[in-house]
Length: 310
Image 1: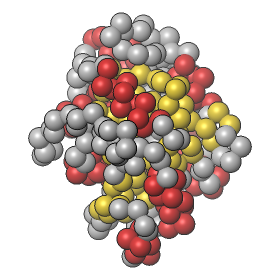
Image 2: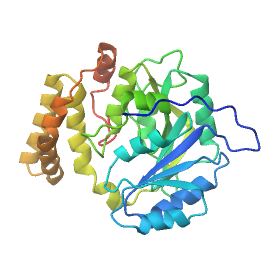
Image 3: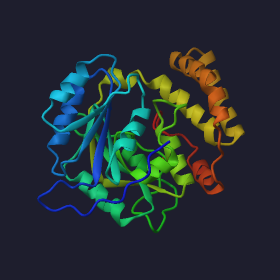
Image 4: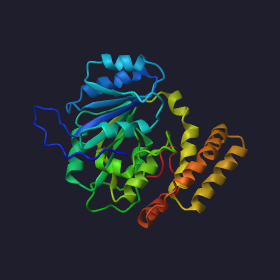
């Protein structure tokens, strides 16, 4: 069960921490990387509280984070919780909004304050996705253009393009909305889990939008990103089985099977994962409301692998 919601925090004084946004960081066996992220978060003018969920298999990260000069709260589940670690952090947060970072990402100064202002001004907004800059050179993530060009109709009470996908380490959520939607889904665990959360927020009446005035920095290691390909493929198909019409899920499953048969290693691993988790997905299957299904159908064309529809 999720804890009850907390009231909005009072407006922040200019000389005090903002007090509206907690940053939740998930990490696993990447001590140096998470310390770099904590350095960046500690330097933010908003001075946000930080919760680190340590999915590591040894104590090195835990000890290093506890020695960090920032006042960081560490949650140690005792096992790898994947993206579900974000659920744990949101449950423990005591601010109305929660920003997500991975251990290779952080926020630009001022972005968290602007995100809180946007959420304050739009009470139906459940999640706002930021512009993501990749690597030391600050290149635009290709997803930025996709989000900005969303074909979904704009809602007059929301501040930007309506979307049904985002980058998990570059978004800020309304805590109440996240908890009401159930957070990240246990069947998916990790990898391309964002689309399902966007579906569930929209199904609950919450808005999901893109705000390029917010900026997150992402410094992924190439090998780390490559290792996730089969998880993205697996969860694209499982998301369809969890929420979309059966013909849509069957078509995607057939396409993945054909790719596996022709010898794509990532497709073979993904198909094995789908077959393993499919009974749980079917048991938890819940169709989207008609208006959300119509929006999803608008986005069923080609999209960047692993990021879900817009």
